[in-house]
Amino acid sequence: MFKKLSLILFLAIGLGAFLVLRPILFKKHVNPRIVDRLPDSDFIGRAYVLDLARETSGMMYYHKIPFRDLFTYEFILSQGKLYGLNLQNPVYFFANEKGDWGALIEVTDSSKISEGIERLKSFIKIEDELIKENRVYRFKKEKGYLTYSKNYMFIYKGDDFETKLEKVSNAKYLDITPAWRTFLREKQFKDEKLVIYSNWSKLKENGVETAIFAHNSDSVSFSLLTYIRNKKPLNISLKKEGTNFRNGDFTNKILNIHLDISKLRNDPTDPLYMWLLKIGKKVSFPTSEFLEAWEGDLSFRQGGYQTVKETYIESVLDDDFNVTEVEMEKEVKVPGFSLMFSANKKARRLINRLLAKGILTKDDEYYRFLFSPQLKMKTMSNYYIFHSGSYTPKTEESEKNNGTWTKNGTKIEFSLDSLSKNEVFGSIYIPVNRIISRSRFF
Image 1 (cartoon, rainbow, N blue to C red):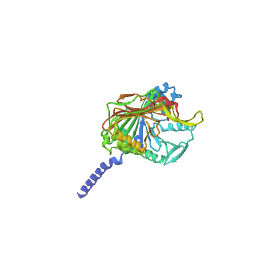
Image 2 (image 1 turned 180 degrees about the vertical axis):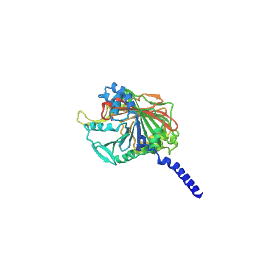
Image 3 (image 1 turned 90 degrees about the vertical axis):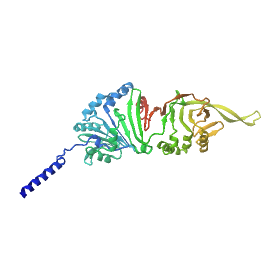
Image 4 (image 1 turned 120 degrees about the horizontal axis):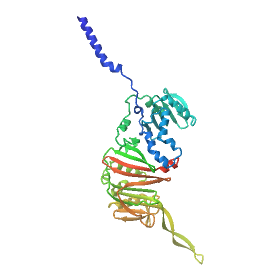
């Protein structure tokens, strides 16, 4: 009887152990996904290459770009199939502040990739070697690397390949990093075809929790839609209206700001306040005094040339060959430069501080900001206006916070579109013809 009970107990324990251990003993191995392999970086993103090709085809043909047939949806799709790459799913990429970057592409047939590498060898020198049991193709001159397996291709350029390869090749199922998990769950721009996400440490130092950029384009301009989420509630808001300079035909730089900063000036611990202090220290700018006096409107315009009269002393010989000094005037062309800001009763104190620090200098009736041309100063209501030339630039009422910045012929337009409690929406526009006509952006 005792033996029978012992046998029953043994069988019961064995059955229980089998049921408990069964999921482990017969666990099916699941390969990691592409997103599980992605390394953390300062900037991460995804691109639907085929959709981007479709979106930009009009731009390519409008500007008659050479070899534009190589960038069409049909050609890229056919090349992907030819070399075993799945370009219908997103390509994931990453980049760091120091300049290295990489991308992962889904593979459907790894046996076809070697043919593509052989074709590449006719254009560029490639060396292959074994690194951590992975066959790696190295573009030594370009500091580039390529490796692949049955379900992914990894491309990298930079000095930290082995660290990145460790994450890519040894990832486990559901081993996605927190940054990539957060990005892929992000609702902003989720339907856009090219999205860049960042929680870069330098952004966090300035109170920015997340920054996201999305691509948009037409035949005329390439644009980046911008979204910024702050850790703390923002202490600034948009004004309904303010005064700024009118844009002109010869304007190459203009900036218009109309903000309510009443909360910002009263909170020195605000990340934006602290960032402005940090920037101001570089030129000994009295940021605190400026924020106390400033009422949130600022307009800057530069471009073209204006004619001004300058006084100079000339030595003149009279009929008896005596030298006398005569004060004369001449017309001189100076760069067009205008600055205007709204201020309260503390404005005069701010002007005196700028003069004391040498940021603003005065010579007779003229002023200079550091290396600016000679400027006249005029007050209009609660605005201070500094301008080169004889006439005050034309102004207008506007609610827009925007600007244009020209660098080596490339004119970039940007705008602050909306502000909410913790969020900022903006846009950056870049003319397509400048991107196309130059081998470098700037």
